[in-house]
Length: 67
Image (tube, rainbow, N blue to C red; front, side):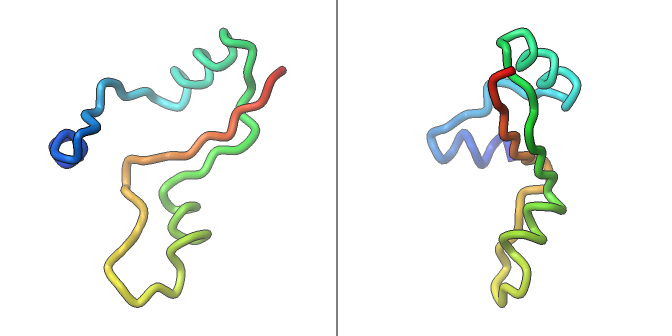
């Protein structure tokens, strides 16, 4: 996936665990409000598709809010 991102012109420059991201957000005065895992993303956005598209297995979506 890193190679694919680089080929698209958006190289991945970092990667964080959930705990690392949670700590960085907390240090910035934010809290995780919602966390979507690849399974959640597939269920919400890719269910019943008839093509090959699905969520990337390493991408998570985080919705953060001010404390």
